[in-house]
Image (cartoon, rainbow, N blue to C red):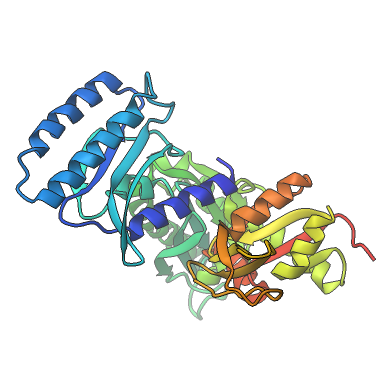
Length: 404
């Protein structure tokens, strides 16, 4: 699924989550891909007959209306879509007014269960789980003094454990033979590696089915000794996908390890976003092929000058079109999400009517696609994604050329 489609899916869930209903009037129906539509309709007709017994007239009318709306939608399907579908229906409150909505959601992953659910809000947890980044990597950085164990979960780095060693320095104390000193030192190193391996195994085994791989960082020959010594649990040992030279073995070493492992993690969004922002910042510093801010980026999009459009998924702006009911003049303005703005026609002095409202991320994405520009939607969970939103207003572009 493209970042644009995932963004649309996330925004749809945010919208549905805001809705509230009375009592248990809001219906959510999860239909997995292998479910027989006729069986679903049969159950809904049974629910429909039971709804006739609801004492509250308003609740009865609303629940029956929701069930009938879902049954009408199901008539369009001979079988569920490839991933199944989720149908929501009910009377919801919006801006102090009530309205009935019925929507079919085709999720990015297969619907995991069959469920008919009534409540005062829509049941969205299984859909929200689909937004979570499923990729998890184990991280170990170590030298002979210390070791840090962590997870790269999606775009976040989590520290799980930290160990220090009792390995003596390379210079022996007086009275010890060099052979005895080296033997004791090797024993201490081996014991430390074993402690690190046990701690890492304990930390990673609960995630072994999710782990995409394990990265090990540190100076040479420490990381090679640790890997070749097979100190990890055998199920984890075979998940090691690379050894990398890093200068730090504390928490900052985990970040350095992810940086050094970019080629191994090139499909991971964290690295993709880092590369995109590095490319953009290089152009900004050199006063080259870069633009940021809505007005400037919108201008370059209309000129076909944008190569890659960079947008923050946390950008909550809408592009609203107003029209004068008297002279027909139209104007477009950008407002914060769900903001109502009074617009007066400059020609007639008459209050203008709102005729269209679009999410800015989707609207700019469509403009970009019309000119063949690539669209990248960055999350704020990564440092680079947060920089795009906070330093550049969440809208930026790498240009093909810079018109004079």
